[in-house]
Length: 241
Length: 241
DNA sequence: TGAATAGTGTCTATCAGACACTATCGC
DNA sequence: GCGATAGTGTCTGATAGACACTATTCA
Image (cartoon, rainbow over all chains, first blue to last red; front, side, top):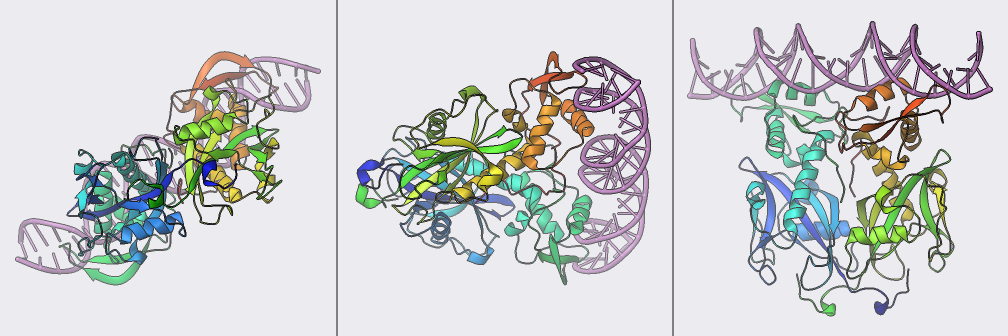
């Protein structure tokens, strides 16, 4: 390692970008902002920006996300995804971005007015066919795959549910994120049988129609053992490059 | 995103650091270099350095590693681990590092003379009790945990074996990395039964003593399904922050 | 009553782990 | 033969998936 004068190291900028996922209208959606300047003027991009001198990477990701949404911080799950640093990924200069994965429950509140030209929750299915700014399509795909994989062996799916939810609502989250249909009876037995996954509220609801269903909150379990595997899909190479 | 003049973004340096693991003398070892200057003068650190203007992050990690070792590039496995960017992790200036995990077979060749004050393969067990430079103890721990987790559902353990190896040698790799002992008979049935995991060479060897054992090369399988789970250990939250 | 959803019981194929047993080498 | 390691066979308990069946609501 060299010294600490600016001339000793290459000029580079570091940003964070966030793949923020939620479920709206039975679709997996990502938060996107419309670029108000070149390059990629008018294209959709992941929310993000420069890391400030005094903040940690996690703090920067949280800040950038809250600048664009009304998500209450205590219902937001954030984890680092990966870093992207191809030399020409930003034509202006060398920019290395640290990407984050965010998961949040559906909220009635629309996107608040950030400083971007526009922001919206867009269906991932459409985004994957669209032209996004920079390498954000790759980052988005990596984020979605990470979420899919983590749903197998963690209770993270509950972060996409409201505070209190039924087993059917939780199952719907899995079905939408994985793009499969699951046997409701086996799913029920599995999730209610995993100690610490769900914490009963003692209440019931009929909002799904039919017989009243018990409602639950997310429990304290962090790791699902045994896991809840995707049908017809092998596990994935989780975290990597 | 702002413009592209240096004054528009915070001054920051980006480095790569590599957690390079191998097995030597029945111990899991990591490649470490001794720091030849302040800060942390004389402490052991992960091999790493600045990302150059024209190279990708993966290229930078590969280059830094090959500067310190004789590992043939075609027997080296590298994947991105995570990025670390706490504001004060380097007292000289803001440095964000992208960490990589590297796996390589045991080689007779010692460490070649790089530009560091010294380099060696050090047992992970000892390193985890020692004081390392910067936040390298955390990075090392994350790298080791990543390797342990990936051994469950990928055939990556073969990257720590020589080109041709026996089932017993492969099992020894698992036992050392996981720190457990495995039933040799069940292990044998499992790995030889997974299509594409091992490719028989047709040769046998008696180097382990006893009845001659068949030798194998790594097959083309990328994902182990079903996985080979660690005994008494839950799966892990693989890649994250 | 019928339609809809919640939740339980049960059967079967598969698999992990334990471990008896056989095979083939060096000495 | 003896000791060592390679490799196979078999049993048992746990689990995933399929699906019959019962429970409780609303219209």
